[in-house]
Amino acid sequence: MKKLILTGVLAVAGLTATANAQIQKGNWMVGSSIVASNFGLNTGGGYNISLQPKAAYFIQDNVAVGGYVDLGFNKVTNGSPTNFVYKVGALGRYYVSPGEKGVDNLLHHGRWFLEGNVGVGGTSTEGSNSTTGLDFGAGPGYSYFITPNIGVEGIVKYNGVAGFGSEGLTSTLTFNVGFNIYLPTSKGKQIINDVK
Image (tube, rainbow, N blue to C red; front, side):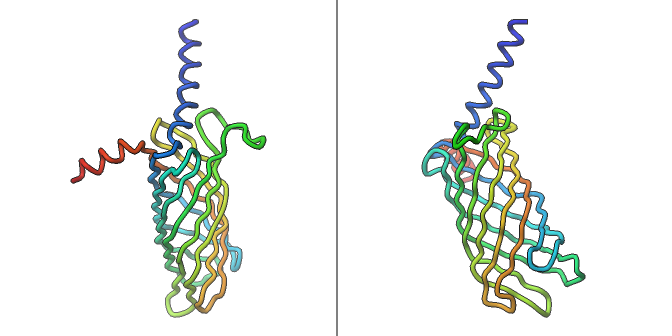
């Protein structure tokens, strides 16, 4: 019985240490959203199917900067045509430390974070409205580490495109579910060398 309790305590401690180790200075984060829901703030709700890869480098503990690309389709429920959406730009992420500012760590192997992005993006609709311009967004999320190097995450985010097309500003509230792989710098270099 003592061995079972000790094993459980060590497992929880190990998962907590893993969540902290993966978001340290010098590590890489690479991943993508795999499910996205779009709640239109201008024209109503709809669906959003897109591929959203992102990569970031931890410039210091808990702080990552990198880039993102978003290519996909969305449709608003009011019967309008399907839109093609494209975005590319820079992102920043800040992971909240356990207990910081009264925010407790949900379970012991995950982390809350805040993400913001800015770049170029737009929406193109067949034969009608289009918007191209400044793409920006911000919102909170939670990353749950299912293994020492893989985190499943959910993020609620406000996204906007302030553009130069027939629509001046498009705004959406999105909920995305995805995953990220966290790699120490040495593992990242090894993977690049193996590909060559």
